[in-house]
Amino acid sequence: MSESLRVATLNIHKGLSQFNRRMVIHELQEGLRALDPDLVFLQEVQGVNQRHERRFATWPLAPQHEFLAGVEWTHAYGRNAVYDHGHHGNAILSRFPILSVHNEDVSDHRFERRGMLHCVVSVPGWRRNLHCVCVHLSLHERGRRRQLDAISGRLEELASRGLPIIVAGDFNDWRQRATAVLERRLGMTEVSIARHGRAARTYPSLLPLFRLDRIYVRGFSIVSSHVHRGAPWSLLSDHLAISAELKRA
Image (cartoon, rainbow, N blue to C red; front, top):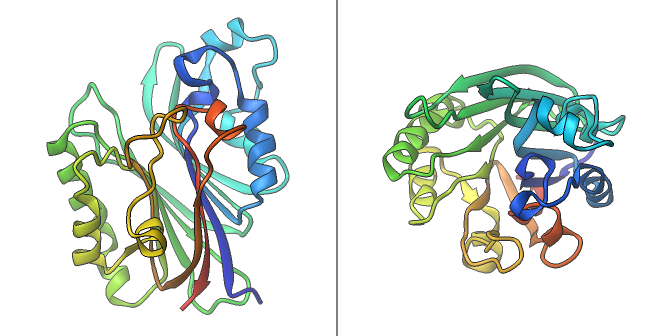
């Protein structure tokens, strides 16, 4: 029975490098395998893109979450944005069985489709199931406030029962307001803030200035957290990956 978890989050920019210059989905797969996390929270995952299929000779035929998962992880996908040539959304990859999947539409308006992907995961040997939520919040302050309220509303009852929870993703939190909401309403802790005093700089990947990507946890002690700067990660998306090692409290 393992008391520890390795967790990572990354906005994969639909499998393209910064400025959409190169297809990097194959390198992303290698990078995730090298990180070897138990749980991966991914945003801007391309379920289907017929234009990219025509543009790139080695574009995977499988949806990106399935391609990245390979045989190492089970997977869940929440489709958020749908257009004439495809769709994209959030995904969770898990080394452990995923018992249930719910994707809630938290879009603030029809021009910016957002979802909250909630998976219940069974970790072998744990008495209680783990609740995992992958998010990609709005670019606009009003939308983020509403989405944080929706996340808190969905998870408050679980938090009151003392269940373990991880909420991770791209928060687009330019004003650094998400932490106070999730601390107050859910008793959650952000891994980089806990270990280093501030959220990690993750955007843009080549010269990270903004602290947009987060891993919030409840029911864990935080052993370590890392932002993966430099090659290869700075070349694989417009965001940097964050990872953490957690120990069940």
